[in-house]
Every structure is written in C-alpha cells, then in structure tokens.
View 1 (cartoon, rainbow, N blue to C red):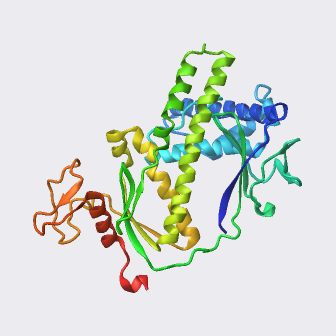
View 2 (cartoon, rainbow, N blue to C red):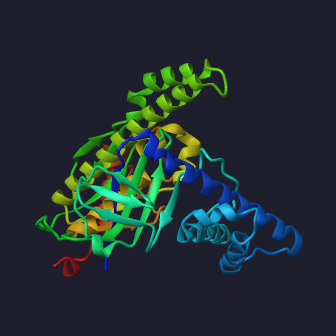
Length: 368
C-alpha cells in the first residue's frame, strides 16, 4: 500500500493555537532531556542506550513528581521523540549524518507526531487534537480510514501545519507514453541542457529576491535582542525565505511534470553536491538540484516514466559525442568543446547531455 503526505494549514486563531505551540515547546524539553541522558550514559558506560531501554525509562520518569506533567502529553508522541533520537544516532553510526543528534531550543524544535490516538477528523474541515477542535484549510480529499500518522508542524514564521500520512488514492499513469528518451546535464546559467538541444534557463529565485532578503536582514539587525520588534522582524525575514522556498518548489514540480510529458526515459548524471557547494556556494543551494531530482523521481514513478542516473565519475564533458575521443585537458572555463580528432565544435553542456543520453538510455529490446 502506497502512502503519501497531505499538508494542510491550520487556521490562525491565536488563543486556540497557543495550545499547540505550548505542546511543541513541551516536547522540545522532553527531547533535550533524553539528549542529555544519552550523553551522560555514554560518558559512564561508553555506549549508547537503545530505544527500548529509553521507552522503559520514559515510563518510570512519568511516575515521578518532577516529570508528572509529561502525563498530560500524548503518550505515543512521547515515544516518537525517543524514536527520533534513536533514528538520528543510527544515521550517525551509518555515516549518513556528520553529527549525532544535539540539543535544540524551543524555537528550533518544530513538530510532534500522533499515531493511532490523540486526534479525530470531524466534518466541515475540523480536527480534534486532544480536547480542542481546530479548523484547517482542506485543499485535497484523503481517506480518513487509512490515516497512518498525523504530525503537527510549526514553521519558522510561526504558522501551524497538519501533515497527514494516508493511503494514496487515484495515483495512476495519466500521461501517455511516447517512447522518447533523453539525456540531461545540469548547469549554473542553463538549468538543464537536453540532448535534443533544448534548454531550460536557471530561475535563481533567491537572486531575484535578494533585495528583499537584504532589507529584512538589515531591519532585523537594528532591533534590540529580546524585544517584540526583533521578534516581528525575525518573522518577516522567515516569511521572505519561505516565499522563496515555495517559488523554487513550485518550479521544480512544474518542470518535473513537463519533462514526464515529453520523455519516457530520462538520464541524469549523479552530482557531488557538497563539492559543488564548496566551489559555487549559495548558487547551488538556490538551484536545488537534489530537491528537483527527488521530485522528478516521484513524478516519474507516479506517471510510469523512468529516471536513470549515471556514475558521477564518467567523463561526460570530456568525451567527444561524435567520435568518442576523451579530451583530458578540458578546463572548466572552456564552454565550447572542440575535438582534436574529428574537429567537432559543440556547446560543452550539450556535448555532456548527448553522452549521458548515449550511455544511459536502455537497449532497443528493453525499450520495446
């Protein structure tokens, strides 16, 4: 069974939403307590406790007078905090994360998750969380009976969101296959260069809104720390960044659906994003290559299309797409590829896209 996440915004009602903000802050205290417990346990026994031992310890703490207020919080959400910490350590041990989980302030702790209990969806776009009823903007229908988890999330602006993981309904291949294949090469000025010589320019949403970001930063720097004016300035800055992120995300979704309508098999080269960030910094974050590939893979799976990725060490830019000669001394500043053997002159990114298409496309028998 396939599950997807539906995200809905809760109505902004200050008196009622304060209850959810206070609960998120309380879970931040629980999270920091178990992070400190992990550190003390490691210093004493030179190993980390597992999640089952922490669950038993959580039950004991709730019976004490000092932590009796934890009994007012949803029990499954408390256990989920333990699971989050354990998951973070597992990723750290697997070298997926550079650092283990660490302390978070209540401003940086953003959500808690409810599993089978603690919520109930009502009519007229209402949901009961705990003993209070909230309204949300229901932009899409979903199967209430197949809900797996419900997460209450707070963004940096202070708005509250309802993230519902439920069964995916109606996901079918509604785009007709046409048998076309293509290779794609990412670039800085040209976002995508296709092997059929079509190009997509880089949107650079952060660069477009840089003046608004600078103005919001300047406004924030002039405010006194701890004041209400500084809080309002921080929210204004977070709102500008959220708008940029939404613009970038919308662009990625539209481009992904456009490519899936045009091609059946799409070939890309794996990118070393960290190395690219060291070279070009903020521009790589603004383009969002990794997020776009994640979105494209989801849309391709949804529409029955295929996304293939080649090894990042293949000489796609240094190989002539006509004769196959490898030009070892090709420098990054050379934007036109000139072959010494056959005399081919072609745009560097287009040459790489043709090579990616040639090496990544499926055989004729497989494509048929």
